[in-house]
Image (cartoon, rainbow, N blue to C red; front, side):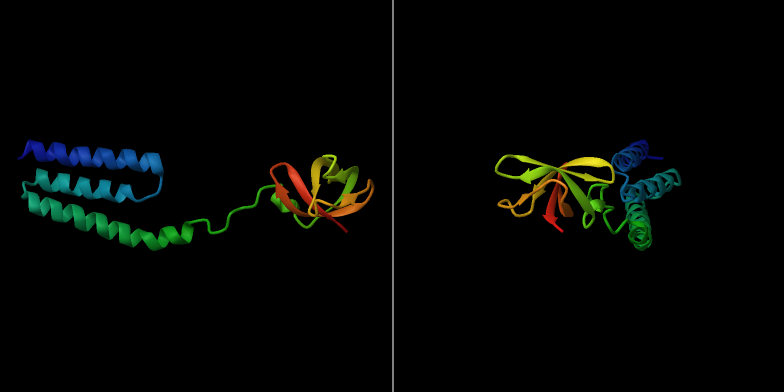
Length: 145
């Protein structure tokens, strides 16, 4: 039994497990399984080329077999933030929106927001209804109804 090969496959296994724990991508875990299979081949006293072939085949088969499953499980759409879910809703102006003076606040669902007019030249008076067109950080981009 070749102790150096046992150590080699053990190190490969450990590095792959650490990499998987760090990334959680379900990719290097299959190389860890391949290294474990090669480790067993070393215990059974197979030659290095056989060990390497088992490592490559095991890792590749597991990676290819699980890839379609991972694609199905992957979240495809980005879930909008709470603020982005406000786009298209209506709000009431509670402080005149005037970009020249740096003022503007609206109330939406009982929450006060800083508001900017989509058209920077536009002044929107208090008590007007506006429609939210976008979100810029903690500011709503609005247009008059």
